[in-house]
Image (cartoon, rainbow, N blue to C red; front, side, top):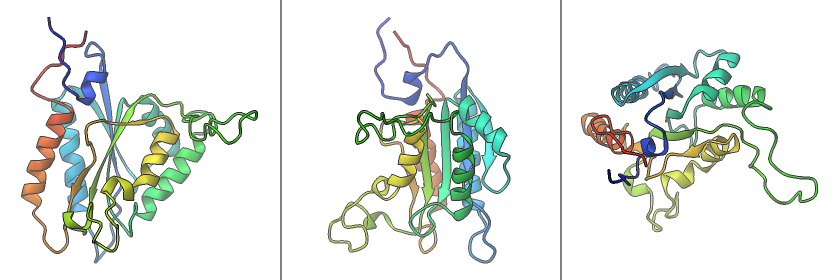
Length: 221
């Protein structure tokens, strides 16, 4: 049979073994401002799609977690799907607390240090990660699509959503995770002033199907 070279996350995994996905919901309820319903809905949609694609799924929330359990789940997962709103250009403080507590406790488990050697202390920073899986990011944002990628816009100066989220990507990669290839970051834009949630969910479904096909099989040679 001919090899299928379609660039999907599944093409990097052996279909003969069980695939595992961790859904990490980064929203915490902010009464009167944001109830977290959209992010919960996106996380649920991701979990459903992974199950349809043949994955075993576990779900975590930054509102209620146990550090030892999260360390086990991060090591267990082949793919980590992070769903979060954009709060002041980053994750909510509860999500940052999750990262601080879980990743710090994971020293020696998630990473073996920062990757540098005493003989070359200026080189190799961030190469000590021990995790072997992949991750992808999905965010909900007040900013419209036109705020990104346009040098004439004063706030982001032509930068992309992934540029804005460089600290998050760096955290994931510090522990060894690789970003799912193929433009994998998903954004629900303009969710406060001009929401179009039904359209966002349809785009999300197509996005996940492209990255993790639920209705096709990938031949690996």
